[in-house]
Length: 145
Image 1 (spheres, rainbow, N blue to C red):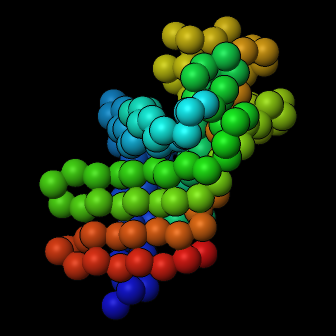
Image 2: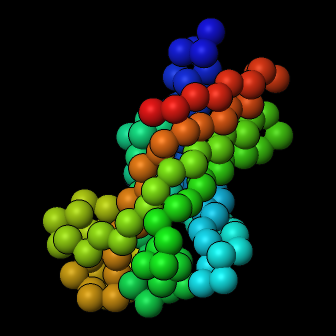
């Protein structure tokens, strides 16, 4: 039963990423990070890509508060939620500036903020899950990866 819930969660996450969302839809999730004083801060943003529950990536500015907070603490949480589900992932996040990774994560809409995938101010945030909590079909599951 847990495996079925995991598969449903992975499908939900895939639908909520810019690279796999239905045409014309720009989904979002919540990314929680720790600030310089150790307090949690939450931001809504669009996930770029995901590898099941294992990894979720985001695109943002290198000078953004998110990127700066990650430099202070790599601990993070990602939440995908609506009336039918709540998928909470807890793990570690890093700032990636590798040109090939930036190119591979570029999507329409980012041109409103950056000149292109080679823009030095553009970066990718790579989140890797350590544990998860799923509430799908009115049933809960927890686990580690």
